[in-house]
Length: 325
Image 1 (cartoon, rainbow, N blue to C red):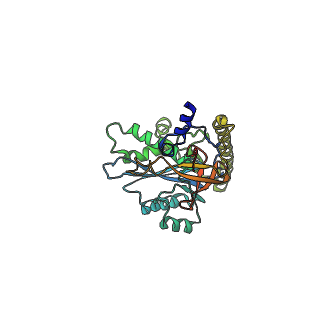
Image 2: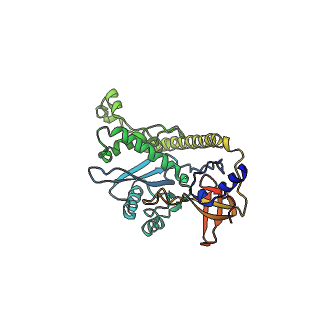
Image 3: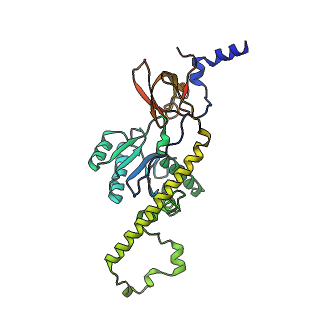
């Protein structure tokens, strides 16, 4: 009788829609390929912050996938216009990126940014609502940025925007674990001159300017050769780091669960945690019917109620429903 009661409770559809599900993740890690040059592929996001003295409530962030060079700007809103202006300013400094990765937020997916991407020849890649980790580089930078601002804002939390430039400089001049170079060096092919270096070596203005007679072509040639060697080294370091982390991540996922075609599943309600007034909404939506395995941990499912299709990673965002009718 115990097993019958257990199976009956297990098949309660309302319970399944609202319970937390603890199961083995369905898919292994598939790292995003990283280009071998700077500012070819960038990720952009928006971080919500406490209102500052100057009225700023958000930080628009951007990270270059190769050099890990970060850009960030305080903003009073996260409108499409503000995001487009931020992207335009980065274009004026570094040129057009070939690929821009964002989530599905309306501040990114709109006619203004579509026109800007079209004019600059940029491929706008939008991450799945069910798998925001696809833009994980920016997500990790956001955490680093917020933690750094929190540490610097000792007295209050309303001065974070005034601290933003100095925190960015610290991140840009720190050696990155994956590349083993600083973002500054990869972007500008040199290390920055820090205040401590001026103090130790004396003012640069004291140098004899008459000794600066140089061959520009020779300097450009040597700098170009050095840059190529550094880029090759950084690319190899990134590849090695991705392989190492993939092996570590997949250790416990040697035998990922497979969801059979035509299985009835529930999909995590991603809107529930991102919108106000949704705390009473069900944690899981569906049931959906799996009809195709797209590979790389993604499946395609549809529901007879809307005849709509949705893509979802085979991770904790999807679970098989028991005894679905």
